[in-house]
Image 1 (tube, rainbow, N blue to C red):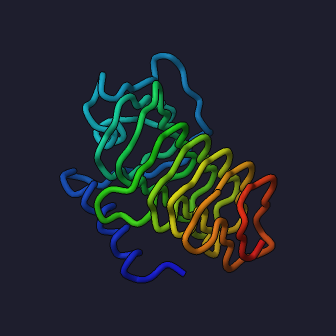
Image 2: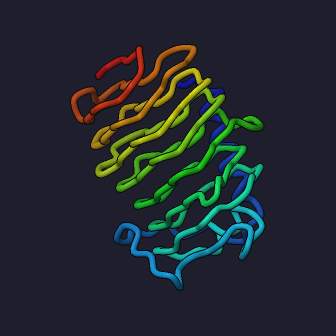
Length: 208
């Protein structure tokens, strides 16, 4: 189980990322990923950082990330997709605090004090796919009731636990690869019968 210290570290990076805003972002629910050409935001073309793009995005926007970015990102706007192009990479973690958010194609490396590559807290319709993770306490962590959430086609290396479902339900975990780890590849704790696992490749699983 994640230690209080790790949880506090994640919350700290979430608060730090939002600290320079004058008002808290409004979390709304919107249909999943209805993206048109006019709804694309480019990083660094339109904004220099992923967090600035997220802070200025609206539900339905797609944020295209190119190049390497050293930052922690908090997504509190529903209906956003963050997608890497041409090898887009992030040295830092992503906290998802809104419904219907997608993270796709990023190379996510540990940097700073955030212990988790992608952390989703009790949200619906989260999609984490085609990403690579390296060096984390948890590569991907889903906490709480999360209907319609998918974690698929990701590669996690060099982490303590590749994919950690913490009292989560309604999550579909498929076609992920966790070839090396220090604790276990995929760990499902709590609501053990409420999640689906298919075609994942690792030598250690708990609670599946």
